[in-house]
Length: 201
Length: 264
Image (cartoon, rainbow over all chains, first blue to last red; front, side, top):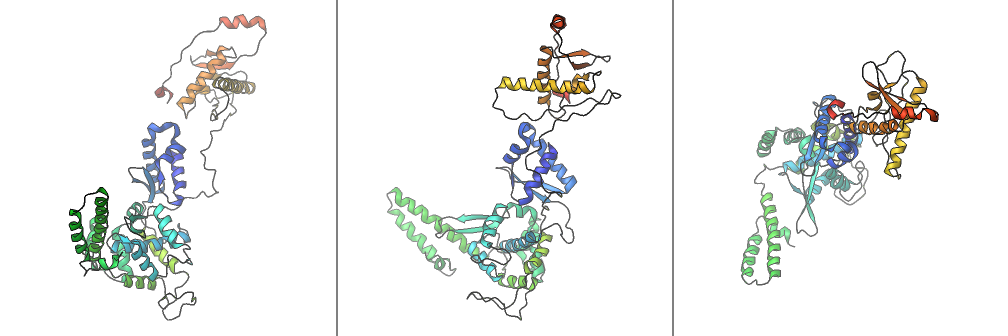
């Protein structure tokens, strides 16, 4: 049972969409619902000890899980496909912008910023294709971004924040370090972001 | 409307609007008007929130334009050459972004994420349904008595047959397994427990015992105790009429109790 669940989780994680507990119960656990928490715990231990992956519950209400990497960063990540790497690049840029701007930005502000990087919402991108779809759908579904509508705005506007997966897979400190590296400055240059990042570390 | 002008940090329009709303509310007597007032308050609050955030009171000033320039630099922009594709009239700042620009960014980015590598089977993927436990009948050596066959029942598929017919089919199937084994190895009866226990499922074990009891009842198999006082099972050969009375007389009732702990 446990190994079945481990396999199930590994395969389901391919798309990076959070795995719902209901799916797990239906496909793997079936007859043993009472033991489900124990089976889940054991699977989590196996994932950690054998694969170095952490099973994290990101939605305690609706019970959804993701897998994150618990091993220290290897030099040169050869386990990542090129297409995924490029998406990670875009994502990091977006997350940095959101954090440095106070953890929440309006969609217009984000796209204005991305335009500076030659990434346009209305235009097919050489690398990312339909960028708007990538950002508003894929990144949102994977829980890297949390996109919520701003009430009573016409035409409807949205605010962008970090999603729960982003909170788990990276940190404000890491992202601030990235910004500092890009700009050739010390992270303490941005005093309030720095203290917020340290408080969250 | 006029959102931008209201947002302007120098304007007092928001305050004026709120004051006017207050005045108007005194004259409100109908629910619809009160609802409009509430709606207005929601909009006003949002605008207020935006104005507050625009003051950057919490965060140290962050120059996003400079950040963008630094990112482009990192991605390898060549500022001396003109961009080759002149598609639209948009203001593209001078400089040529190489095709691997985002690869470069991505390489750096992966260092900041603790992303689980995507899992792929080396030999290609299987169907996504969990594997059906197959029925395995191994040949049993005469020498080793301990190792008996374990017939693992196949997963009970949903059949349109009624419950009773399903039971009969199961019983028949189990009889056949017993007989097949016996053809291969006629002199050694199987240990009863080895025959019925399914190591993976207590429920199936109980089911197996249930089906076997039918075989016994119908005289198609018999259970006896061996030298170690452990029950063993063997099929009965179909005999002529004359001996039936003998068989009937030899039947006994046995109750076997087995709970989950023992089963484990």
